[in-house]
Amino acid sequence: MLIRRTSDIPSSEITPESVYRNRREFMRGAVGLTALSIGGAAFAKPGNIADAEVAGPDWLKTQIASASPGKADKAEDLTPYQHVTGYNNFYEFGYDKTDPADKSGLLKVDPWQVEIAGAVNKPGTYHLEDLLKGVTLEERIYRLRCVEAWSMVIPWIGFSLADLLKRFEPTSKAKYVAFTTLQRPEEMPGQKARLSTIQWPYREGLRLDEAMHPLTLLAVGLYGKILPNQNGAPLRLVVPWKYGFKSIKSIVKIELTETQPYTSWSAIAAEEYGFYANVNPKVDHPRWSQAQERRLPSGLLRPNIIPTEMFNGYADQVASLYNGMDLRTFY
Amino acid sequence: MPVLWRRTGIFLLSLAPLGWLVWATLTDKLGADPAKTIVLLTGHYTFYFLLLTLAVTPLRKLIKFRYFHFRWLQTHRRMLGLFTLFYALIHMTAFLVFILGLDFSLFATELVKRPYILFTLPAAVLLIALGITSTQGMMRRLGKNWKRLHNSIYLIAVLAWLHVFLQVRSSYQDAVVFGIGVAVLLGVRLYWRIFGTGHPRTASGSK
Image 1 (spheres, rainbow over the protein chains, first blue to last red):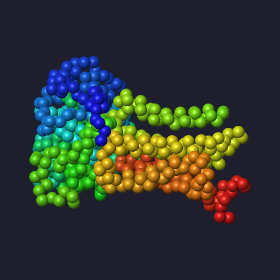
Image 2: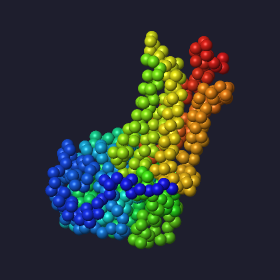
Image 3: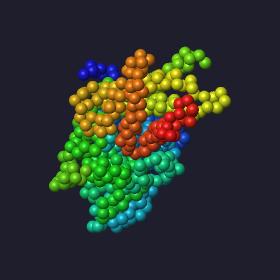
Image 4: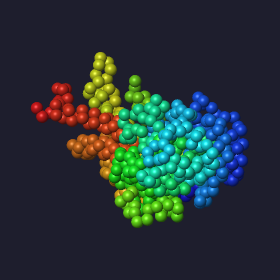
């Protein structure tokens, strides 16, 4: 075994403890610093929390700033802001991990409309501002585990999907919730790529009880700031006990359906990506093991490999949803 | 241009990708998972050099204008082949050290669970064998068998492409681009095998 040296982890990747403990004060102070505006769009070139300001409407900034602080369920380091916003899978902008941050600058996220459709009493198309009116945002610190076997810990700002759905009154016919991402090739260059395996728009879905679970989050911000484009601005889902591809980004449509909806990755490779996609170290992906994951940032000489936990460590809260279900069959 | 200058030039150019990679690593430009990035990039470099090595003979035989030709590349084919091996070794070492943390028990399970790694092992072994037998002395010692052994570069190219293809997730781009490269460079040799090269001295074919 190599002798590990702590100096192998660049200090830029470690959130200083003083900053971590006082992060809310630090960030409120940081908002007052000179904004980094590039092209005027809501494009945050990843950098320090201190000098990245995500452009966006003032009402959203205010609402995010008054979010109640979150508490992590475990003592683990947050993934630094520069990595959360600089290492992304958002194929609408390209296939490299740096493409979303580099190429999402053209995306216009304001104004933004979301269509609520299907088995609800109050369908319609709503502006983001109306969807968030009167909503108290919360900070939620969640683990995000990608199916590729890397993971991060991210302080999201958002509110429970359940609260949104209840407002539109799902009928008794509603069994599932289907989500659709924006399709706008002029602003999302990856959607013009001919060799993509994904049929746009990206679509995902949840069973109704999964959607109504208190953990399921609709996020509009992270690290106390407006959600950057590369992280799924302006509205995305976070389902922390499932693989990351279920946490659909840049949502334009939420539909309550009677039958299990189309999900993009299952359509690409049904034997590899299931509808449920619950994080499960005992059920491997056909081409790689899911027993472990790399918690990012991971150092070169000190790979941060940790065992993957059932339901990504949220078993206490979600295991009951799957009582009696064979999670190998329903992967 | 004197051969020595060309050799030095090609040598230095071939080291450039590694130089850039080392600089990017030291200046922390590789993102949140530098290990993955290094493994991916060195894999790409290996494939580029593999295609470059395979391109030497077709370029020499097919591109001949007045004074413009590629005969001079032949002298450097061995160096290009050795750089393919060089980057392949860095690629594999990076995986073992940075991704597996030199945990060899993990290596065994990874081998079994990741089929795209399992059959690159014969490709690696063959490539090392080609490197060891790349010298003039070895050419003499092996005689007829040297050509036979070194023809395994075609198998290596196919295995390398399979390694890429079996990792396709969100985009076919890498598989298609490298696939076209391999298909063209192997296809042209197949064509020559069947129809001859058209050159009276070296023509071979079933006719």
